View 1 (tube, rainbow, N blue to C red):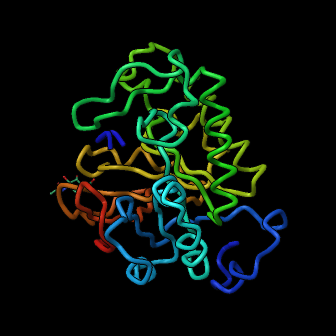
View 2 (view 1 turned 45 degrees about the vertical axis):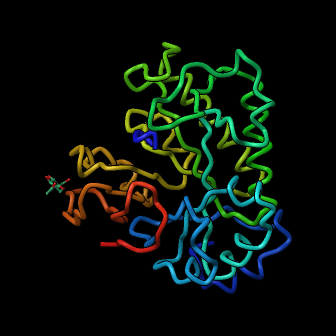
Length: 263
Ligand SMILES: *[C@@H]1O[C@H](CO)[C@@H](O)[C@H](O)[C@H]1NC(C)=O
């Protein structure tokens, strides 16, 4: 969120019947996979989410689990691969595990648009333990994959820590290891400078506004690796082809609260 914001599915049935979890293969997200994303889903009922176009849906893990919702993800997982979003690079002060962060585990605020959110110190062991617990919770909830957001604090030194990009790649690789150990796939959120650092650790990428920023071409290595590039545009629907890149694009309102908008 710079806007600070299969099992090549042989059919949904295979996913539904896949159990126990430990025996499940890590989900694949091939280039061109049709997807949807609904993060602020409190006004979107399960029946609507089920109607989302495509075989993949990205939804907010902690919003659901903290509300005691143990059914939505499992229900969606009967017909879709569920990517579970959480903010890995910010401490959100309203989360149940917010108290687990010590004062040295997070720093400056993300900004006015994101009240209550502060950049996480990606070198913090405590932060890693918190993310490990979230990833384990994602596996338990029935997610196929995780979408850890805000891992681009290095970009323009926006988190103020001044760490090299390698510290963030290390953080993503740590989460990728935990995800793999829990049979979950993982995507790289934005962080275009980090694509080559983590390409061998990820199963897809999630992007915001690469058309708007005219940088979609930088996803060529992801397409070449056969992986999906899940793109969200907020300003305008742009379904332009980008040479060498296969995009799975959706056009959405900024608050990501509704299904649809695919190219
Ligand atoms: C649509 O995306 C293309 C390629 O990313 C870009 O060159 C173009 O300017 C965009 N169109 C609009 C209207 O923004």
